Length: 483
Image 1 (tube, rainbow, N blue to C red):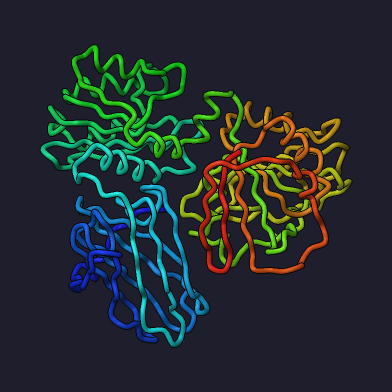
Image 2 (image 1 turned 90 degrees about the vertical axis):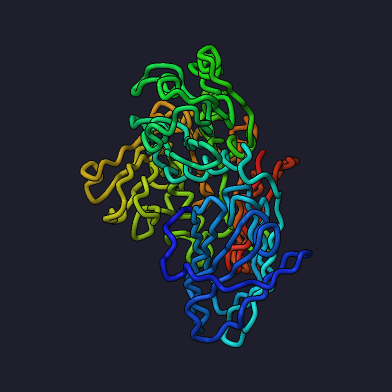
């Protein structure tokens, strides 16, 4: 999810008629050519438990609506905009979020029930359930830290994503996030934003401030120099170079420090970084598509590779994506369509190929490509001039591939099960036997009996997933869980 400024045309909000339980809003009827639809709610009533006003704008509910932009104006006067596809045949949709990852900072779960924006539809019912907490409490500002930290998604690796908020007299006076490795950290940008107002203020930061000299000076010294009186930390940094030394330095300087606020949320933000710090290995996610009867599919859901689609976002988030030689038969290499996205390293498994015809390199793809094979292969179209590297292994070895990623400084790898199943056979078996997978993402498509291949036989093991969640994506269902 990303944040954008609210359009001036949406400032005038319509009054709401909110009931207390359950929290439903019934907006004005939707017309075929409707362009704007705006909601408003009161505190702890209506759309969102901690929002003064919530607006939904730029809804095109005609015959072929493609995108709608949902905006949420919170008490902090911050505006978050989210893009959702609302097709003609859409009947209902459910969105599950974890704190700031979803529709609004105040809700853990946001569900949209009875959405029907087709040709003959006139009504939308919206329900929001979530945790109500103190407006100016520590949790509120740490959630804001996480929200702004995600502005740098895909750009900070191998560093973590970090956000910082400076609060004085109950008001946010400075904000900042770490944009990419080698650039100043979040605390520095937030202190610059706050200026002299940082003195005697409280600094909220999603990750423990660093206390060592690297490519940038210690953030602890910047906070001490700015004379902040209190620091609230989301989670302690697992990096052994930091590992609570930042907290200790601040306390030794007479600054009050609180740790472990919204820790689960902060850990989720940097799950790949944390795993790499604790194990020395990249964080590996297994992704595949299924038909409703359990067949593995090569295709993805509609528009998921476009900007804002979940697959486009995955390509932005992960440092590398492992695919079969099937990907080379497509017109272009995989690339994220997110604005300004840093493209992942393309790792191609070519076990069953002796000669590979390379696709055209697209203009929006700046990623590198490595081809792993168990035998010598012939590359066509002058691959060496495209910066494509080939590595020959005695056998397809996932551990060797991950070790290569580690030496490249990559923290996260996505294994995408599409294409030639023979390419994945050995590494799937190895991955499960050696517990090399940390996360799984499954897209279930509304398709029945579309494939005869069954590489899932390599995964027929008794394993129970943790923290399994689901959400709808148009006509598909997306499942996410952890091993």
